[in-house]
Length: 284
Ligand code: HMG
Ligand code: MG
Image (tube, rainbow, N blue to C red; front, side, top):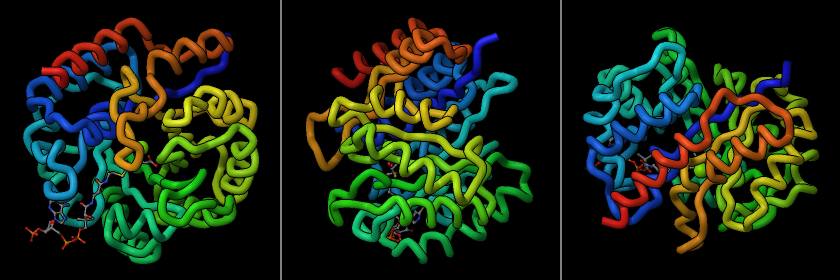
């Protein structure tokens, strides 16, 4: 039997938050459902953040409860604080993801906190999520470089990843937020993080701005990572690099993994159709 890789779909959240047009709630719901039907085991649905920060996902309270869920699929949502957690809980969330970064500049721009403040804000969120029996995830952004602070040390990534795990995150996703990562960086970052938490709990979240996301996936596989985040049809983009591609496309990731002999349980064609339907909606 071939080895399994878990593909985490983030298109409905990371993809749509970065598109200038807003997709109607009903289309978001259908998108999430189609992705789960395509075999994706985890579909990140939306964010319970400030609607001023991300107006594209201001309908999270309507979208999440409307999703018809499949048995065995997880549907995490982003939560920056207790307020977001309470909204997520009321909307029926089964999983939450908190998010901070390895660099202070990005953390300030993204969530208006220091890294230390963000970890303090997440502690009660994670505590309550675990009591509620939810699956929990934590993101460490700017692990491969920061648009404000420049180079980021693997030790800084590892420290934040370790703190998120200590606060109760079942999985920590290490992000190349602006797609500047190079394959040479991957082994060092992964090794530093794996010093703090089991490698099975580590995911890579690679944006494709620099066109090297799949090379970085290959380096991640080599380093032993078996969980990767991706976005159907490569939806999204980076707010710091207008016109640039978003996350690595799920269909490209899945095809690449299958070519490498890994099993994912995901139907790449079905993912591509779902992504293209949303692209058509975005184009109006
Ligand atoms: P703030 O302005 O410092 O805090 O925002 P605040 O408490 O003063 O709140 C500002 C306003 O938002 C207030 O409303 C609050 O009530 C409201 P006002 O009084 O002005 O009308 N508010 C909320 N509303 C709804 N839900 C909430 C909530 N919290 C406060 N949960 C805050 C701080 C964290 C809220 C804000 O900066 C924020 O929402 N940021 C989110 C930014 C975001 O979503 N970024 C994208 C996701 S991260 C990412 O994409 C990276 C990732 O993909 C990994 C990678 O690529 O590396 C995950
Ligand atoms: Mg991202």
